[in-house]
Length: 97
Length: 211
Image (tube, rainbow over all chains, first blue to last red; front, side, top):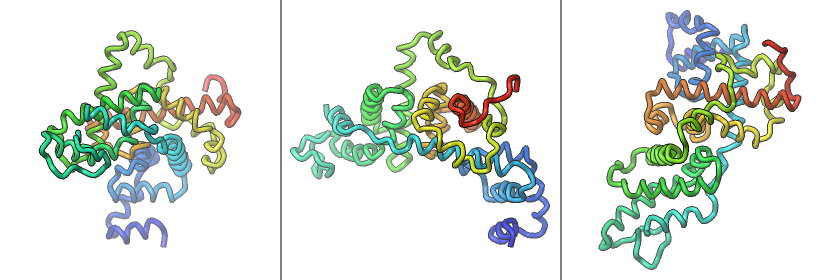
């Protein structure tokens, strides 16, 4: 089963929605890459983006992978920083002061 | 906050001291977000010393306005909002207007491109393996810290703290559309800064002149 068919089955799409899913343009996808990565798209739009990318007839998959790689790089650089030792106690002390 | 001898994380049972119960609730609800607020403050201020001061100011203000906060609703976002406001007010006091203008344009960033600026420069099919692993984290952090503050905040709140757009909009007190614009521009500028760095280091070939 292709990804498109699996998504349609999972989401309960019928025959009438097939044309709509297949018609997303490269420009449409490009405008939604950040929304996609940020988890802001509804299920139907996610299906449309993925169907377009998986069709593989353009450079959208490469564009998406690049944005995902950037996102992971940025996230990996910063999200482990913890507050310095003693800051918690200094905050508590200032609250009771 | 608690006048008992035991200053551990256990909440005081008796509330004979005025505010001690609400203080214990503040500690239970707000203190778990200390690391996240510190990370945010560090990206805003650029130095760990200033970040620590910003964190203390944030929690103090939060404690003082605790009665305005509805318990159980997004405490972390509420603390981010306070932190941002404290930072902006401090920055206004410290800087003259022309310094602010200079700071936001010091990188002379080209107009943002619709596409990722690295897209054309890297033809590899596996950008993580072939491009990103060579860029050391410190340069990414410097590039993030080089962004204008409002772009930097949006990128940090999205990519690091994982807040959805509507929560970022609440923290930054602007519409969701403005958040999307700041994320787009901030990320494109960040990608451009990293592209410049990667070209200097020879990770990717330099662009042809005029392109």
